[in-house]
Length: 184
Ligand SMILES: Cc1cc2nc3c(=O)[nH]c(=O)nc-3n(C[C@H](O)[C@H](O)[C@H](O)COP(=O)(O)O)c2cc1C
Image (cartoon, rainbow, N blue to C red; front, top):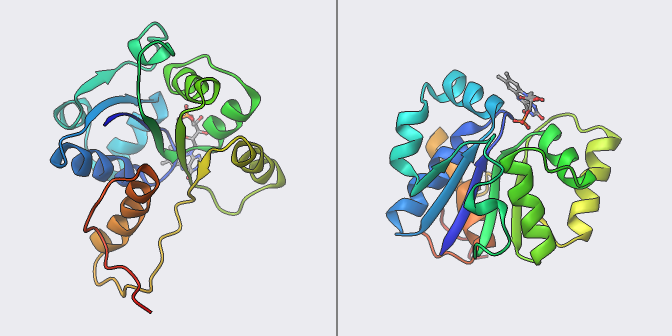
């Protein structure tokens, strides 16, 4: 698959990084864009920067470059994931604002009727946040809040992270062994 992956400035940058590792290992083509605050949180929470993300991405785009391939609907992609998705990015997409490459690529997904998966992270959520999520959900966006389950009894933080990334892969229709499935 050719998948756009965006990392924005919400807490949980590790979800975006781990998703890139999984997609790379599975041989998918990724077009990656990180917002300015996404880079800040990646550095703060994961102590990684451009070098590490470039190694995980097939193509790393600059967030200011709204003329990049993924800014056009004529560039065919199968899906886009925004993990984590800040409330600023969520609200901008819901309002139809497309003034950076994360927002423009998401806008393209909506206008072309392609799969868009967002992993919003904030707590508590205001009515504005909830309304923005509802607005996108009604447009067919898969809203996958960063709320991992614990019914698989994780013993490490990595298992908690993989639960979320596995749910993202489920939304994309990508097979994985990231967490054991509930068997009843
Ligand atoms: C360490 C750190 C953690 C943050 N965590 C969140 C968060 O969990 N959710 C959120 O919506 N914003 C969070 N923010 C604030 C966003 O980064 C800020 O609103 C920014 O404007 C988002 O821009 P972006 O959507 O272009 O990445 C955080 C900022 C920092 C520095």
